[in-house]
Image (cartoon, rainbow, N blue to C red; front, side, top):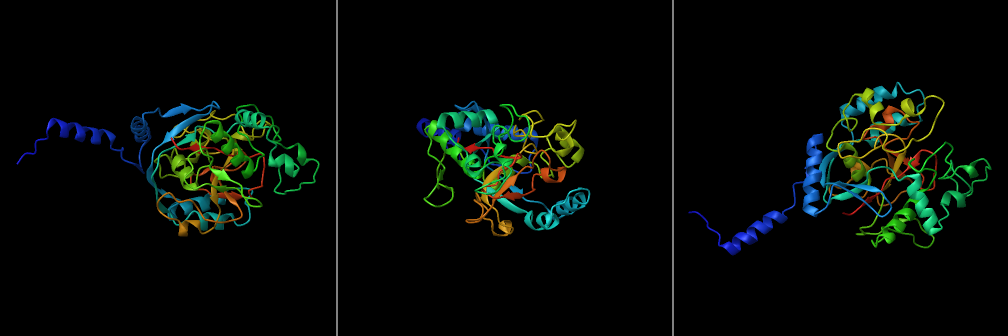
Length: 352
């Protein structure tokens, strides 16, 4: 028996079909499929894949999706072999790769987001400092290249966001700032655009996220890795051939040449399949999550927020004077919230 809809029922059915959400982006998917997912969600939201906010910052639409977070056992073995070729190995580095990138686990991100196409730049941070009359924690704590709240070394007081220890332009990623400076920037930008702030600072406490807020914030570690991978399951967002990293990242082999050191202007290498620049190299990017060595063993599947407490925060992507090993999509690093150096920056996300 054939079902025939009345004209009115047909209109309702067609409207419901038109409003149905596109499928999530389930990895693995190709670069073409990554762009197709972005386009489908942009149409769903009645927006463009790329938008420009009031600060002149380009934001890229990242679809909801599903992926395997971390490294497989085989990838860990390859990373440990590569570690043997690194001339300066930090204590416990092998244990960090072996213990903290595993177990590889399924993660589902249920909501679309917009992510900064690049790391926040010196020029964008300058707009915040000048408009808000903001004095960074780095300045209040006595200078950069430190993790002290009262730095007394006179040489360090000159290491600031505007002069991190190497030449910068307005297009360089901002560094030499603390986690608190980053959250203050996010709250200011949220208020500037009439959005609810995502962070609060209780008296005598530390910055903490506001549940359900839809303003600007740092990405969670899971959001960062999903956006970095952009459908790939390889060591890097372009594949496994480390020789190709030169085309995508400023790291020790490309940034420390010709006597010049330091982070380089953003978006001067190739983007990943989602259209994000410098996800590998240039500046470490802080995430919102607390660090815990066993975080992957305790992670929830949907929208994991990271450990509820901790003393250090996650950083991803590697910096300009680190090695190809550290630029891998799965590599995890962590810093004190008040730590500030010339190679740690950040990237923002916001609800569409």
